Image (cartoon, rainbow, N blue to C red; front, side, top):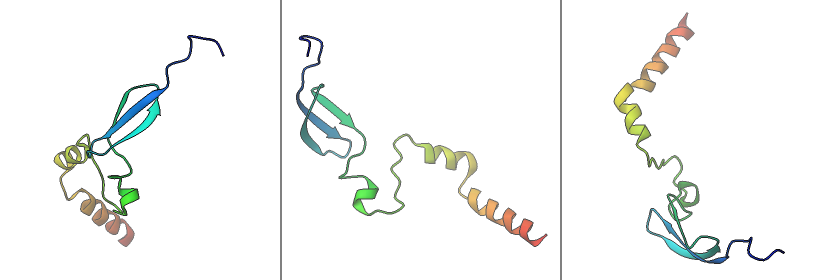
Length: 82
């Protein structure tokens, strides 16, 4: 290997949005992540729990309201009757 072209491999602290921290090794001294295995619904058995960090669900409900899916189901029922 050539000398001086590879980044330094050092201890790294990983910090999650839920507050969990752990040590690993990387080329950067600190990593900040939004979701880890301690708070992700897949690993927690939460089923359909959704972590919305950007507020997209709130924007959608403001724009279309909470009845959006109920309306589409009733429209589909009308089409089936025809």
